[in-house]
Image (cartoon, rainbow, N blue to C red; front, side):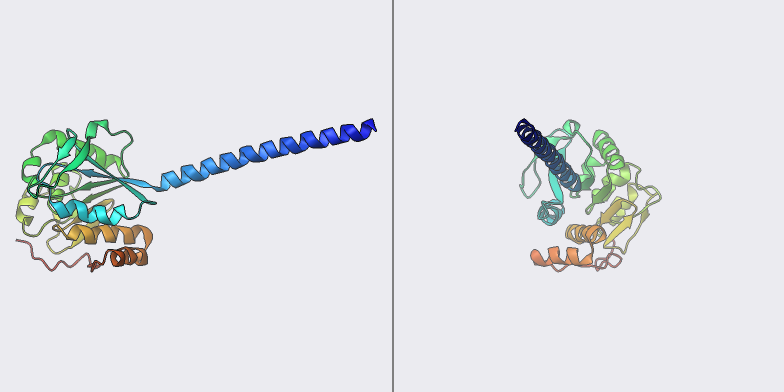
Length: 238
């Protein structure tokens, strides 16, 4: 009788221990899944400044912003606070110096504000630091002038807004400026032509990372006629 009772107790303790170990393993496995999921979401940091071009920001933001399981969007500026443009479109930004871990992707828009910001050495230095630490850097329109000013495009292929091409190219003659590209890729650097070309480049970036069908699906969802040929811009450089 005692032997039977002891056996039942041993069995019960063994069962409890097994269940406890299983619970711990399940919890740990869930943490690993959550960590992996978190790691797959790439932060996209838009570097903002006054007089940015509206579509340079909101075009790519619309495309990447739809993919909440893959990308997260944040807006930063040198001093933080509200940044606005000539269209009177305000964006609340975080201060660049308050940024913790560098983002995986940096996006630098263009606009009339770039004419002033190319001489903003603190901003150019922060752009350089973040770009060096990131996995990818995307510029739209004259945003490539800011990146070029940092020296990171030296010897690399890049493009920009065709109407402002001469001005952008004059900011750094060591860049291999491409007058005909809709968007250009050189390593981790993606640079696009003017305004709407930022959307084409963003979709091209998605195609490079997730496949052409994935990018076409996103374009279809936003009812956008994506120009898929990055090497042939219908706009001519001036």
